[in-house]
Length: 368
Image (cartoon, rainbow, N blue to C red; front, side):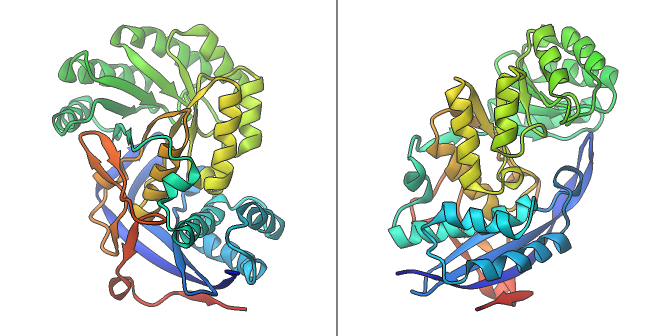
């Protein structure tokens, strides 16, 4: 029987091509914590945590510390018993979802290799490919319109526009972008909790003329009643992001009839296992989901893409981090974008290869 026998942590830093701004802050560098899990039969799986302090409340140091607490609980465990592994992680430490996501992704990659199946097929295999939008960070309206036009020319049919700092300037952004890209391209907007309820209703009423597909998390994450009020007060569908981290949050927004969609992110949920539970809760409520991400590197992006293609009620994604960062120097294979769609490799597990020479030595090694 395969048993977990070793866990390694690596740190990988990559600068973005240019700073990426949302209402919560600006990112110019990715600091990814990579995890490799070994089993007793010589198989390995790779995972990734993307610490995001202003959403997840974590840092590279806290992720490493959390994994240090979790690792001893996993040795000798059968990696195919993923539900049990999550129970052990949750018993070891509360929260710390990106650290748990890194281990969860590595375990899923490992299990895919043990079974000889691509992860998306192993999880359900609903679709061979899935659409992604192209995100436009906050800057001046003309600059955002120029970037949106560039992405449309590259084949993207959905543009996600970051807003949430100044409602009137946000309205101007949408006006200029819509005029530049035409009526055929779908526009989503994401305020990342940046507006009040009243501001949201006022600005969305004015934006209705621009044919907005949906608005993502316009108000604070804890304000579920505010989300519901916005939903009842505008014709633009509402999607929860920061309001839904785990399955319990998903149940809360569903029971409150507060949103039309849920944005599932592996870093928020703690990995694929609990992301599947969120999707199942939404499916029971006849609700579709979208799969998003933090600003991540290729391991986490590929894992999210496998999850998105596996599940029937996930209709689209926001998995476009590769557009903003320099090439990932250590990871080959995995997901790629073609004409606005995510295309996955057919190799077992995540379908990635890691250049260990470029990655260097692990910063931590855990053994029994």
